Length: 225
Image (cartoon, rainbow, N blue to C red):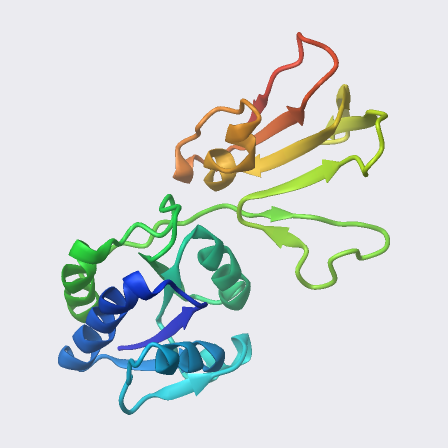
């Protein structure tokens, strides 16, 4: 098995956890490739990964036959990692060194058992749905997808905006509000939740339409299958 190690800068209080992760990979003879900028972060914390490969972008992951990408950080790091594995048969394992751990579920006490499960391939892959956004101006180029949500929000003006929503080309509603969140089931615990949206089971495949500060009190979040 070969895995990729991806992350961003982390607090000094997590140095021992990250060192435990790398030592465990080495002890289990799991070959790994490190994201080049993250390698510099590791060195700044005095962590020596030993002999390993490096990757710069998503194409390197395919060329190196990576099976699993280990994301070291919080949920934001996993969201960034998702852009690297889009369209590839590569699973993401999140090791939490951040504040939020809805997606990065492996904590310090679980690192050794998680790596052991990787070694024996004693794990299951949970599939998550994504949002795909199409705009006439190709606003987000090739990164026009989202694991959490897509938000339409007003600019820094006092007026509300009007958003017309259609489902399968059939009119649903016109929202007068500060904006609108279209969330995946994964993103139900993110921005949508802060705006009063429901928590939806991650693998359900549902979407949630959540208005931001709607003018009409009768307008509530809407779950779409």
